[in-house]
Image (cartoon, rainbow, N blue to C red; front, side):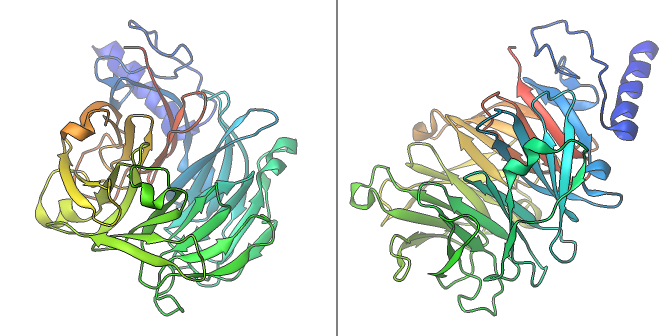
Length: 410
């Protein structure tokens, strides 16, 4: 037992002090990913509680954002030419670009500093090999636009990048949402003092370096998903639909005609804390919503609210799903029949939604980046990106940095 404890402490120190180049691997006793730096066995990957997901790689917040920085959002990009996979990691000081193609040896390619001041809220999305970056409570930050193909040719890393251009049609914004089908970006959580009172701003980015202000929709929206609709409500098929998570309710808007957006419907629910963020199931029948403050305000376990959007004009509450801990849910995304939920102090939770029509959702795995506790606080996993072709999943942890995990074969 003493030897095992010593080995665990030694590997954790490798994470906590050097963060990169940590190549020591534990010897697996059950089927795992062969390149995992710490396989999930007997409920732990090194010091991290886990189930069915191995730790493939790690990079510290100090390396990503600098001393004293904190993590926030993350997104991913796959180079269409080299097929390399990159993590785009948001920090208070800016965005870090990390090559995770070999996940046990991630490489910090470079950083793009904040356009103005540091911000605890920085968000990144990708369209046509360009990154679009906004920051909240950072007046005059605008939207930075960065050509990700620059990452191919860096010989002396990490490089200190500059934005290719900056869109100034928005000052600060909490989030940026992109519909890749239409080539439009939507800045949400903007200033309540601006024309649309914090509602989504429509930005044409079909020419990525020459964005065009295309209007907006009034009414504060904290986060949103925008899709070219192809769901069960045939009346709206082919239209561009925005689903806003708007503090106290979910609002559905037809934004096909940017000069004349039309609210289709809205819906709220009981025990609202803060209607934060949500995502469609892939068939566009159900919308899975996370309320960020209900755990704190009502004492509930982690709660997800699921709406039936079979009829966009008449959304209905379908069910509520409760996680195993008291931790606060944050960003969540659907891939196939799995819902990947960043759950702050409880890490990420992977939930099977294949039987959601029968009001059944089942947690099938997790990786807890915050082993200290699962309490109701704003620490741990901020966001998750599960869409890499390799199956690697990145997690942005506020306190520790970038985690790369992957489903094992258990």
